[in-house]
Length: 164
Image (cartoon, rainbow, N blue to C red; front, side, top):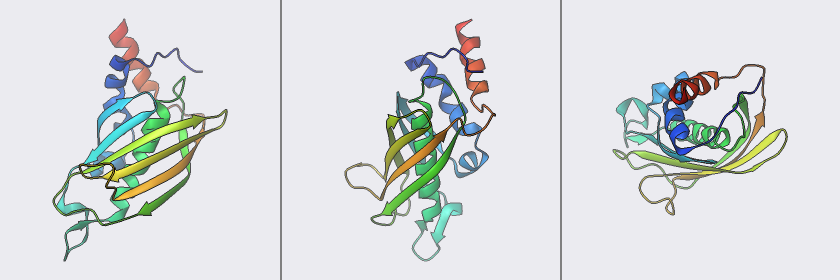
């Protein structure tokens, strides 16, 4: 059953950590939500030698960028929905334009631009400091109400506790 939910700046702030904590892989990569607003999310991954894909160059593995973009897109979808529900990535196309610069933090920005009854559409960009100079871009689709589980129940409980 869907809970009553109001997407306010305060609630978005409360949800930031929860939206990443329920995905252990995201936590393991060090993903954090730097900023969020309705239908948009900005995530970061700090440079870490454990995430290097090429030991000779120090470049972060492309899978880290993929995971960051997938999570950023998922968070943007959650922030575009009128109520909390489970979602699943249906398709995520990523175009890599250049390698990430060794030693620099990765940023990812995603925007959910369309939500239908069953599908959400999203696009995103991975970059360092300037979104107009991307490392990679993506477009994706997410299935809504992907299963009966509601991973956001904790977020709703946290918000209700803060409001009560």
